[in-house]
Every structure is written in C-alpha cells, then in structure tokens.
Image (tube, rainbow, N blue to C red; front, side, top):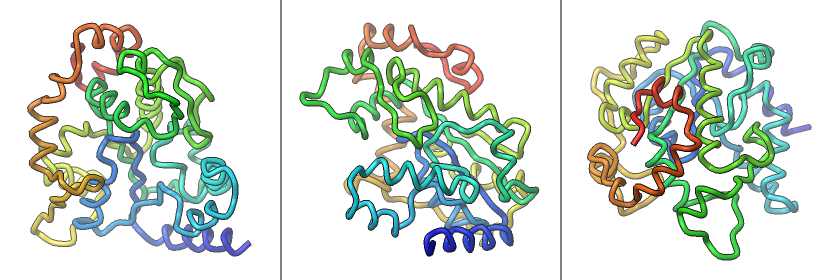
Length: 263
C-alpha cells in the first residue's frame, strides 16, 4: 500500500511539470541522453527503471525479473512502462493520466549491426551454459521478459530490433521525436536544442553541459564512443556472412525510415 501511494504522489508531481518519456532498447544511449536532459533542461523524465525500493524488495524475494515485471505491470499508468519496452498502442497509452499537452516522447534507435554486437557482448536476461558464437547468437531464439511487452520468445535477437523500433512508430500521432543513437553521440547539443524547441521546454542555462564519462564503463569516455560508432570501428568485428544472416531478418522499411543502409 505504501508503495502504491508513493506512485500516486509521483503522478501528482509529474502533472505539474514538463514531462519527457524516453524509450530505447538496451545499448542505445538512453542513460547518456537522460544525463543530458537532466543537466540541460527544466523538465522531468518519467521513470523508466524500477525505483530503489523495488530493487531492495527483489533481494528478499525469488525471481528477480518477475518482481520487476510485476512492478511495471501494476504501475504502467503512472510511468508508461519500462524504458526498454516495446511501446504500447495509442489506445492504451492514452488511458494514463500522464498523457497531456505537457508530455513529449523521445525514442532512440541504433544501427542494428552495431547494436547486435553490443547485445552479444552483454546479452542480459539470456542464460547460456556456454556462450555461443556470434553466428549462433544471431540464429537462436531470444527469450524476453514480461516488461519487454513482446511475445515471450522471438525468432532471434534481430527480431527484437525490428519489434521494438517498429513500436516507436505508434507515437507518430503524439508529440514525439526519434533520434538515432549516433546523432546523440555526434551532436548532443543540437539534440537537446531540438527537444527544447519541439516540446517548448526551457533550458537551465544558455551554456550546454555535456556528460563526458561513460554511464557504464569507467575506462571509456565520449571520445571512445565517438570514434567507435561515428567512424564505424565496429565493422571490423562483423563478417560478411554474419551481415548476410542479419539482413535475412531485418525489416528493410524500418531501416529506411530510420536512415540506415543495408550492408
């Protein structure tokens, strides 16, 4: 009961603020963009991860993922779901008290070839006795969690990219912007300027404040990521045969919509 009351108080707080809801699959720079928003804009980002009290709760209960899934199922109307989830259809989104003229949606999409390499390095909820080769990884079913808001098992991780990014098109009739992850790395100040202008959000200062450190890896910074992704260093890690496997499943229309070219 205390937890539910806490969520209701959060909704009341949101209702008095300019709001941003961010969606993006894992490894698409959602943490970095959140930092930029926090440092530069007079706005509140609607929570997209579990709060600390849920993390503490799951330490005492079995089923770590189940606890998180239940949280987002019960509180969807208060937070519009996990930030890494497939976006729900407009009819469901509009039932939330948060949907009003003060909310702006931002989605992040990453080059699928580079994204799949990132997912392979850290496959999150997959449980492997022996980690598969990248080729096997691309061909194996992908097991989702409840808060993904997708089918329980997808054909492969490439279909995960298709499913999540296709759902972002649901936001087209709402106040929404889609950014490519690569643009956020290349032009962080312009990205913040675009969000500020489209959503009529005041900036905290005339001076842009960047976040230079990695949000995940201590020995990597913005210069590393700019070099790796903007100069496409990831190409050295992927073979022509692996690209062919990826292309068999990739949604070609989505690739074109988000400005990516088939390799």
